Length: 149
Image (cartoon, rainbow, N blue to C red; front, top):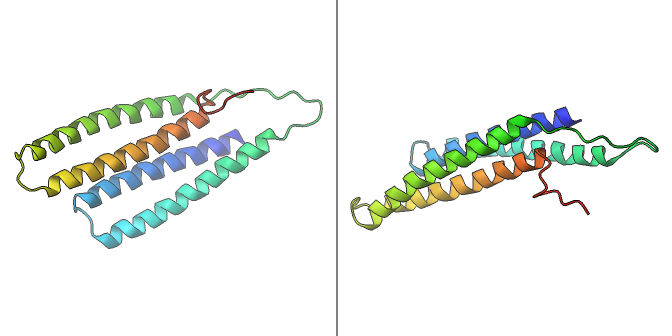
């Protein structure tokens, strides 16, 4: 069951990355509204299915046979790598977008739409990074998310 959960998590992370790219390109007017809307619907559906698979797997993992001790499974190390890469991308891109925002505030760019597009991109990047990091922490069985009583 862990393999199915990991595959679902990888699909979910991929869907979030693609959705983030399409959303940011949409903010900067590279796509028409129709392409963005249909892409979000498609990737949203894939994301929901992945989340349901991961949640269903958690319920199946909790079911243990009588008298058989539960053996802890080692997490897939690729989730830690993905989490670290996403955080690096987040820091670098937010730094670049912050520079754009500051330059717009100081009227280096006369058009204020650059500031609004920058703020929209920052919001999209921050939210998607948060979702991916939480997914990776879940798959790593991080004590940050899974408190043992």
